Length: 133
Image (tube, rainbow, N blue to C red; front, side, top):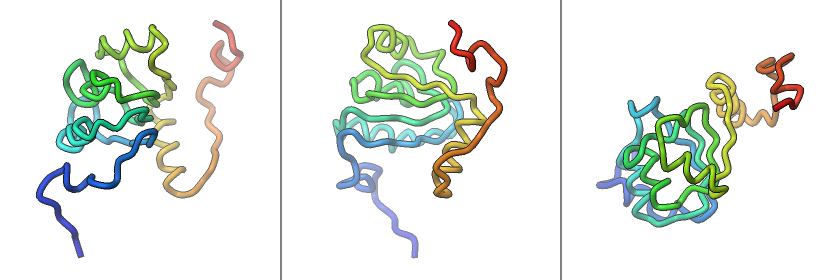
């Protein structure tokens, strides 16, 4: 039986807490759960880890959580269009973990399937894999 809620705020009531991890769908600004993002923003929860393919733009999408200083860490494949994100990262206010898009998708799939780790050849033989700047 499906459960419905009159609003995103009511759907998330009693589920959000400081320090939680959120996996947020969508691609760029397409298909993002805008109402749910706004409900998270309104809740005031802080120190969030956000997993998404990108972090929106200033004032739109996940960018609204960046604006309110609610995000502590980001795991994403692209963040290039959010100036405030860049400012917070460069100031040391935001932890960032970049993943190629396919690796990010596989991490989410594996985690959902209870697989604690997997191997990927991404970066093998490159300067990144060798730890060179």
